Length: 361
Image (cartoon, rainbow, N blue to C red):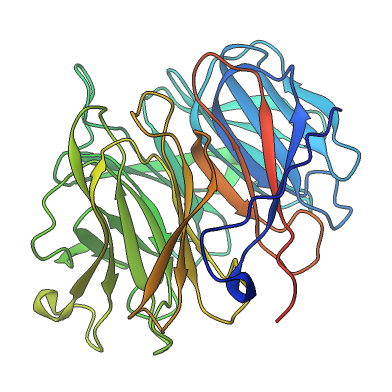
């Protein structure tokens, strides 16, 4: 492992600076790392890093904190998403992955491969949608490119004997998928750009107002401290167009589409922000927003929007002049500070970690 040490001071007063240390976990990871994920695969209490290559290198995981590389599948061509979850109920986290043609899961510790469905999708999320105590899945493809459609949600409800009950729900074409309890009724709802689907029944509710860009990345957090989950959106595809980055303030009645209020963070931005995440990065007790632009964009940056006033005032600051894709927010060293794990999707084998070194306030 080679370490590149750099402290990036964000463009803010000294007392408010956030510091990040860039660590190169592996210069020789899989080629074209479309899949990034995290999970405690060896059950030692520390989150490990998982990477899947589109062209070479298969699916691997890096053991925290030595970052020793282990192979899950050396042959597969992996697409853009995966989640660590105990699917078989034996107490260790298995791994659900999207390949170029299938949704599969790998059984820990043998990493035996099981096919869930022969379907092309871009995103997959895990939750117990029917409250039977077993993890289920929801998946969606992307609609920004020729021969791809993002107008169907695929639900996979886990049944006895390793079987999966597939259900589909029609939605507007686009990209982006998130699972969150939007109506605070203690079950998992599903969020896409401009709409959230209520569990159970999957009734669709609008929240986007004038937002009409269909290809997005999504995050959820309470940005204004009122106890309700708000939503943040960035335009994720394709290069060469422009839109905005915004967060949407949840009303008391989240089913009231007219009650959601949009707050614009950046306008215009190029539609290559294939990551948006939320956490308290500057350690002031408020949820911040982080985004990353992909390498095909004109401006390459990992950018932090610091929440300075319960969602009413924000400071835009560059963490690093670097591109990335589908990053993960994770506290790898257990110090209470959210770090960032990422890699860009084309032309590189670099596995990057941005360690949050912001001092306590």
